[in-house]
Length: 146
Image (cartoon, rainbow, N blue to C red; front, side, top):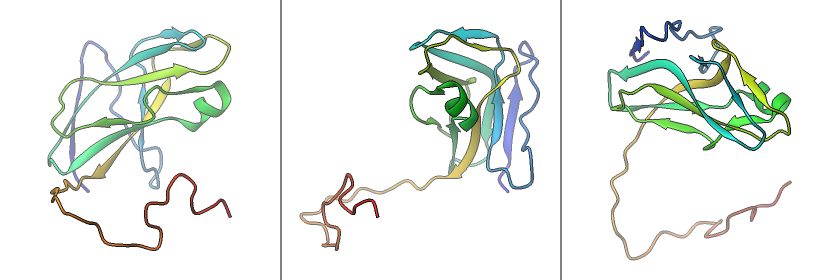
């Protein structure tokens, strides 16, 4: 298990993120402030969490909470959040309200999930041609739905 140094901003007084179960892939991120998101609007939610992985070969991924999306129409404004290993600022969560009702977030509410994954940095090598495959250039549903 890689170690992740976590600094909690003392002015925010937030708990250290924890895995809910032994099988949890991510920890919950909690709102450090109360706020409202109007229908169709976006908001940046501070969490009070700063991270510092001990290796550059890890990325922190911010993912949506399925319950917020399904029950309330609240999702990440950018699909997923990518936090590079050398970022030291506060982890904030960009949310968007797809519903027709104002969504209220209270301080301490779980607003997203944070998971850590290994990173492989590619070395880009210019070539004149790519090898052939059965799929080729087919994409966007070219393999069908069944």
